[in-house]
Structures are given as structure tokens and as C-alpha cells.
Amino acid sequence: MTGAVVEPVALFGHWICPYSVRVEFALAQLGYEYEVIDVPPTAARPKGYVVPQEFLDHSPRHEIPMIREGGRYLADSLPILERLHGARGGATAEAIDVARWVDATLFRPMVGVYYGTDPDRIAAASVALGDALVAVGERLGEREWLVDDAPSMAESAIVPVYVRLDGLRALGFTGPVPESVAAHADRCLDLPGGRAASWDADQQAEFVRRFSTYRERRAGSS
Image 1 (tube, rainbow, N blue to C red):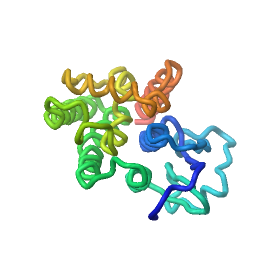
Image 2 (cartoon, rainbow, N blue to C red; image 1 turned 45 degrees about the horizontal axis):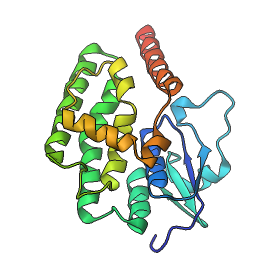
Image 3 (tube, rainbow, N blue to C red; image 1 turned 90 degrees about the vertical axis):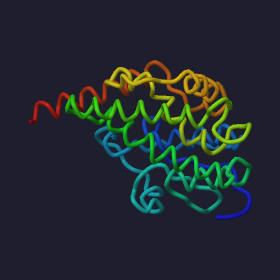
């Protein structure tokens, strides 16, 4: 897709999905008019939930997030971020590269923490996530933002880690969060996009409860 984004944008997603959080952050931060059509990820769908046919028709892998703008559809968080930021700034070649680096470096160990069931693997994921956050601090250096002097696509990419950091702590993350990264997290979450994407106490508790229950069920079936 090229050219201006047609508003309002519809986001098919769910608050518990880190990839959806990215997109909502970008939509709010960039000032788009948008609506969220709630589509829980497969593992979080309540009994009897009916997936919107529109989503099934246009999401290639039936995975969130997906956006609709005008009569066009786009799936997967990084292409969506590139589309949204590309139309309004913050999608330079460097910002795109750093967003991809964030995706490759932080998300696997982050998911390893909360989906982990074996204590040793959770501990290993915790160490890897801590190392990744140290690398974020090194990339930040003395700067306020990951690229240039303003929030960019790179901030949209990393925000889901910051949103669920308290929940990750409760689920076994014990690694370091450098002061520069903690300050960056505070800046991101204080932006309009951060306020739109942040979790309240009930959502944090639901996140921890859901994955604690998942662990208990896995332990009971082994």
C-alpha cells in the first residue's frame, strides 16, 4: 500500500496480544482516527466466541493484528507499523531496521518467560530478556529515543515489552532493566500512544492469571 492512510482505521486485535499493542500504540501516537474490533488470539478466546467473518476472509493466517483502511486490509504488525508510520513519519530506513532488531532480539525471550513451564527454561528466557534489555540500553546511549530525536516506528515495536513488564516480573523475569531503558519505558508509556496501549491493574492481573493457569495445566498433564 502507498499514499495516505484512509481513516477511520479498523484494528482487528486484542489487548493481550503484544503485536496488537504495537499497532494500537502507533495509531494513537500518530493521531489516526481508529476503532478496535476485538478478536482475541486463539488461546484467549472465550467459549462460544464467533470470529468475525471479515477477519477470516482477509487475514491470510487468521492471526491478529490486521487493519482495514478504506477497502484494503493489511496483516502482521511490522508491515502495519511501516504503513502507518510511513504515511506520517517515523519510518525511516533506520527506524525500520531498529524495529526489526527489537522484534528479533526481545520478543522471543519475552514470550519464553510467560509461556515457559519448565523453571530452567523460564530462567534461561529471563537471562536472555535481561541481556536484550541491556542491549537496548546500549543502543539508546544518552539519547531519549531509539532513533533520532523523536518517537518512531522503533518505539512502536518495543512498547509491548514495556506494557507487560510488571506481568513478566510476576511470571519469573528477574533480569536487569538498565536505568536508561526504564526511563525510555516511562517516556513511551507517557505518550498518547502509550496511554492508549497501557494495561490497567485488572489487565495486568488477567495476564498473570492466564499464564499461571497455563503453567498449572501443563504441569498437571505431564
